[in-house]
Image (cartoon, rainbow, N blue to C red; front, side):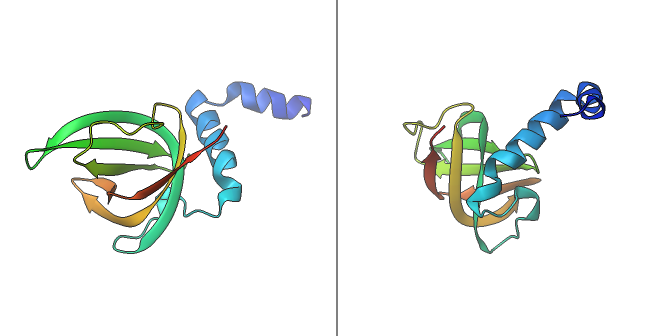
Length: 118
């Protein structure tokens, strides 16, 4: 890294650096970037867990996991769940399912998931 590159990185916003780190982390997984998700098509995306919350959905407890891959955010919604072992803040996860828009959010309902090591 040259002096010019170092100076540029020092002026870069921390969110930009984190987004760049995430894009690089998931580059070799052959996934669809979250900002390119198409509704009603089966897709595989990956990201780090940014937020987790349990919220009722039609009277059923539902775990909502917000993932970020540096290009955007998506929400994995697991109905009937309050907890999934291994899914925690900062953990890398790959999910596969059909995306849709709901209240301005891109979601996947009950996707298959894989925990990523490291």
